[in-house]
Length: 252
Image (cartoon, rainbow, N blue to C red):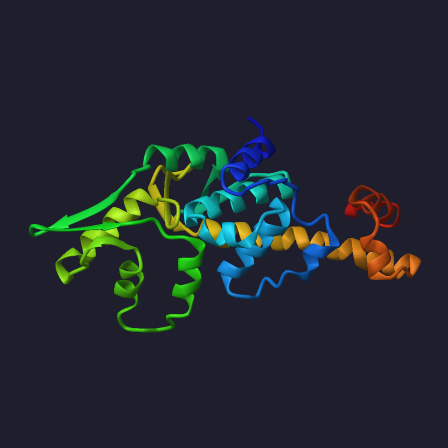
């Protein structure tokens, strides 16, 4: 299955009437502020490229949002995400992380219920959503932020001190790509390497690069032909790219 087909399938299961397009081909993409709180940026990017309702995307699980964002970055840049694990010897191990493979990994960990138990106590939690992320972003530097985060996810039972560690571990096992640990071996000396990577941050950085390409097209066309941004926006993306390539071939 191609990345576009995978993204379309995943989007259809998450957003009613989803219609997928790459990010960075529509001048409206320039309206998205990448310096806004991260949950807001993710929601607005996905809503724009999936033609979806923001309320549905806020309600989607964080892992679904990450997979959608990751696949969207693959489609938009025509390249998969790579994790680079540096070794002390100076070499680097490169691991390709495709959205489709990570989706299979997530599916293998799927649980209908997330249960944590310790010292005879028990609590049930749900997976976090985009709306939860936005709420957490407003917690600031509270000393009890870890407890506050977990307490918003409790479905049944009480999150006692004895259950904190067990609840965090159970949630991490059921939601493994929020803080994904990747492992490999150094290609030169064979040393075992591991690293926690933030797929959401990486995907947003890649999409910011896609936007930079669109900005360059707008700049070139406005500078060369003195067209307004509105006129450039009215052009189909393929025509905009062709015009830009006539002026600067590397922008094709």
